[in-house]
Length: 360
Image (cartoon, rainbow, N blue to C red; front, side, top):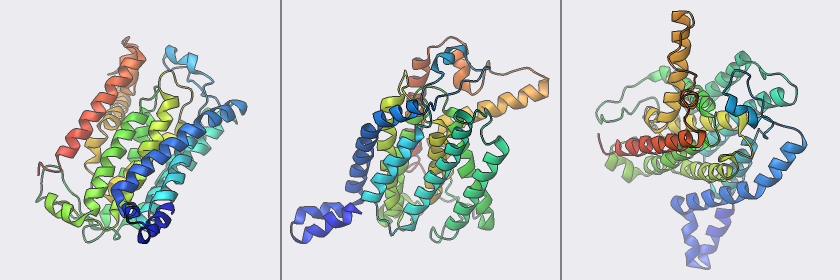
């Protein structure tokens, strides 16, 4: 709550008044998280090496990945710590929406951390098991969905449909299972994408930067009315949470860019995806997430198509390997080229998503 102390000084020196503005605090939350992650990164890498928390490479994975065996994993801890520190400094902690977002991030991070620990320290390649992990994801998502239901204003169970300003389906109680699907689906989509150095973290950064903008607009009554989007009181503070995630993710990218010094593991990927899903719910732009996170959607669909086609045809494949980034890798494209091209595509998706705020 550093910002409240600094803002309190405006009675003595007027320029301190800037600390009451969400935009100003979002910038400082971003910079703070970036600084903390850059500061803690080398220390965390050494601790992970010291405790032999190294990446396990699947035998059926791409051969080019075998050289990454032993690279420190569970680096998502760096993201969690950086975001937590930054949000505690710059966000209004009396706002329940900030806590919902934090609980989603830390809760899914804890599930991923347990799974990573089982894999790398206890030697269980399946971690906590797919069934148990899914049950935990659903249980946490259900708690978050029930909490958000009815707390997001008069349109809490309504949906905004991109491109259409007069279509907003009212889901009623069906909003809870829908919200559950958004959170769990987003969490697993980011997890599936995290298969190359820096591949998942940059699209996630772009998504949170996009939703930082949307959070501010949704939380501002005048802007929301002008754009004909739902106004959610208090949602503006979530922009600070998103800004902290942008900074923490950029700091993590410093160590995760090719060739990676550490991987985020499920600790990071599940946390980022879960938090992204919750932010989409808070801002009442749930359906827009499919566009903002288009890369994650494509990666997930490639796995679904591959598995379904494999079962229907008795062993045939659509892609050489799924998720789809491995397909391009098997075709001979260098890993850095695939990564950067996916970053570009992610940016295009985000820009297109923002344009829909006016194309209604």
